[in-house]
Image (tube, rainbow, N blue to C red; front, side, top):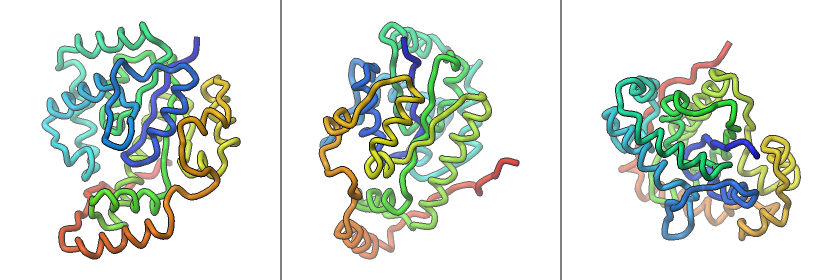
Length: 251
């Protein structure tokens, strides 16, 4: 029986494509997954709800999911363990184990994973850190009418990535760092890396079943870039400066 999978990532990183691919190898995403108008996110709805409750218990608002990186916020959620009634979280994990191997993907996990680690059998999990080219991600964010300066967006994403890497090193867990662009530009190589890490037998055909755009081409075109820049300029006065602590480099 395979190990369970936890994907650590931010929003609009291509994680729904990656998760839908891995699900084809037999991983359970949940009885119900969160769906947006244009696609299925493959995020277990119960996991999303529990993560939202953790943020609420820590007194953290929506800005900590999309606009603010704060080591203090991470510590607030970490410190909830031992204070909260863990029964709902344990019951959810039992349900997941009954359907194993399971896969978790929720952009809130970079905030909440240090709470969950106290309940998880970490040796039974495989971690994937998924990132995306900052420029491509900024275009997607801007097309969603989230107006953010590129500099602050890049710093924010970098802090999330660093936090996820630090977590995996903290628990001494091997992880695969996957880039969304590599999955699209170099699919065979990236699928081989996934198979090696997860002990799966995914193929290029599996990716073609879940990714409906042309492979080997950028998901975002020059037209998308021009459109994003125009949207950004039109809404420049309402831009957000994402709050992110300076990156702390490991020594």
